Image (cartoon, rainbow, N blue to C red; front, side):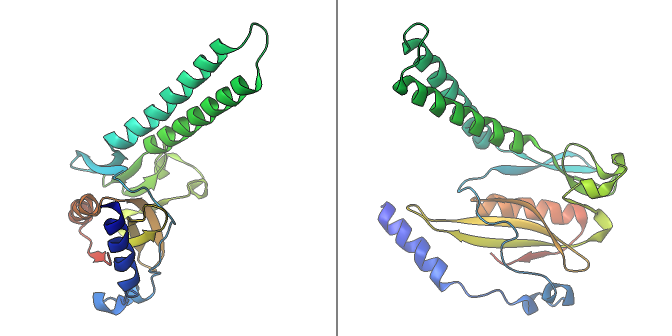
Length: 216
């Protein structure tokens, strides 16, 4: 079954044609890049769009992403405790050291992914900004310190892309970006759930009153 699925995904990737921005009938689309804004992505939904209230939307970590992060933390903690208990009093052998190192790596991985999943991705009509981060642009004196933000009035369109991710179990990762009036892009989210991403794009497009350039 997996072999047929891999073959189907590879065939779909090989048959994909380059995006023709002219099909969107917008000169800004022709000034916009159409390759992935951020390479890679997970093969499941990592973020979902949530309406906090009528003026604010947020992309929040999905339940599966949170469980995955928590799982790595627990596996890592269990490994550290288990191998530490196995060690002789006052000494750690090579096996115990390797086991504890493995546990620490899992804990760091789980902690980093959990933290990244909690970083806010916000569209706020009351403040008039889109941003990624813990502080909104209007709360920062030097906005240059914020890597990803834009006034909502500068957003021209929502761009959807697909990226083929090869490997033993190849898959497509689907990307949502906002396109500014000058054609520049800001990456918002990417993950492996095409249906969910399109649903979130529809909600976001209605919220911003902007078109969707769907190149998936």
